[in-house]
Amino acid sequence: MFFERPESGEIAVVVHIDFNDQQAKYGPEEFVELAISAGADPVAVVTGSRLKPDSKYFVGTGKLEEIREIVVAEGVEVVLFDHALSPSQERNLESVLKCRVLDRTGLILDIFAQRARTHEGKLQVELAQLQHMSTRLVRGWTHLERQKGGIGMRGPGETQLETDRRLLRERIKSIQKRLEKVNSQRDQSRRSRSRSDVPTVSLVGYTNAGKSTLFNRVTGADVYAADQLFATLDPTLRRLEIEQVGPVVLADTVGFIRQLPHRLVKAFQATLKESSEADLLLHVIDAADNDRDDNIKHVDLVLEEIDANELPTLLVFNKIDALETGAPRIDRDEQGNPWRVWLSAKEGWGIDLLEQAIAERLAVDVMDETIVVPAEFGRLRSLLFEQGAVRSESYDDFGRCLLELRLPRKDFLQILARVGMREDQVQAA
Image (cartoon, rainbow, N blue to C red; front, side, top):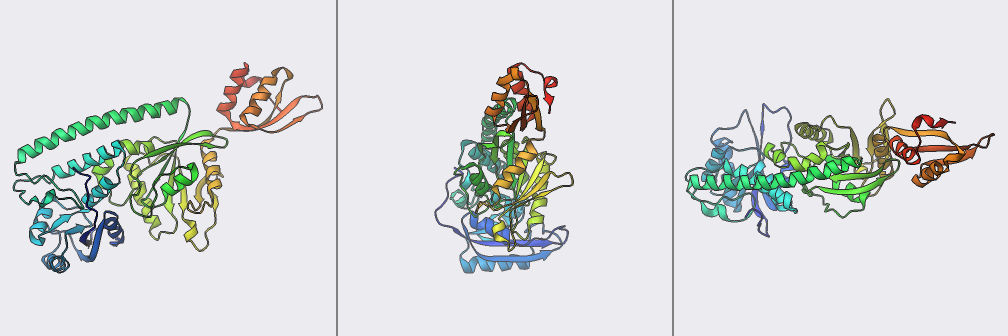
C-alpha cells in the first residue's frame, strides 16, 4: 500500500528555518531538489530564523500565518518542512494549515518508496515507513484524507489505536524476518567471495555525485543514472577485471545526504554492509559542487555510523568536465600511494587512471622482480606466460632463462604450488 503514487505532482510549500544553535548553516536549495525528486511542485519557499523550534508549531505564529496565507492563495496540497517534526507538531500544523504536513524524514522515505525496485529494497523502505508511522499513531486520527496517494505516507486513518499498533507490530516483525533471510543470503555471497579471494570495491558518496554513471562507465552495465537525488536505491554488484589484481566485485550503493534519518541508515544496514565490509571504498565526489567539502564531511559521518570510516578509501573527484581547468590526474601521498583521482565519468576521462589507482591500492603485495627459471621447470615458465605476468624474457651468459615478472605475490605462490616448488627455491636474477 506504500508504493502507489499519483502521476501528477502536488502543489507544495517548502519551509526552511535556520536556528542559532546550528553549527553549520545551509540553504533550502537541496531540500527543494528533494521535493522535486519526490514529484512535488514547489510554488514557494518560506525561510526564517529562530533561536529554537517552537514546541507546538515548530515555527512562530507570524511565520505560521505567512505559510497559511500561501496555502490558501496557491491551493497548496502539502507543506514540506526541511526539519524533523514531532508527531504533535505535525498534527498541530495540519489542524491550522488544513492540508498535509510532511517533514524531512517523511519526504526522503517517500523518494525511497518511489525508487525501490528490488524485493529487498521494497522491504527495507516499508520497514522504515512502518517504524516512522508507528510514532505517528495517536488517538483521534479521523482525517481520512491520509488514505490518498501522493507525497509522503498516509496512514490507515483508523481510530482503533491498539488495533493499529498491533497490526503495525506484526507487519514490522514479518518484514524483519524476511529481511533477515535476505541478509543471510547476502552474507553467504560475501563469504563465498572472501573464500575465493575476490576483493570488493564499493562506491560511496553524496547523492547525485555520479556514482551510477561511473559504475556504468567502468563495468559497462546499464544501471539507472539520472541528474536527481537518490536516483539509485538498490545495490548493484558487477564483476570486472583489474590489471595486476584480477577479478574484482564493484558495488554501487545508495547515496548519502546531510541529516540522513537514523532509521533509514538502520533499515538499509544490509545494503550498506557492502560498503562496511569492502576491501576498498571509492568515495565519489562532485568536484564542481560548491558544497563539496561539506558533502565529504556528511558522507564521513554516515560511514562512521556504519563502522566503515577506518576502511581504505580512494577519493574520486568526478565531473571535472564542469570545471574550467579540469584535467584527469592521480594525486599521491608522501609514500607515493594514490589517494585521490580526478576524472569525468560522463565523458570517460581518467577511467584508466582510476583502474590504475584501484590496482595499486588493492595489489599491496605485488611481485615486481626478475627470476631465474631452471630448465627442468619449463612448466613454471609456461604458467607465468599464461597468467600474463611476464614483462620480458631473456637469457644470461650461462643460458639460463630470466623472466621479468609483475603479478600479485599470492598468484605467484599458487603457481609455484602447482609445479611443486617452494618460494625459497626461486632464485632472483
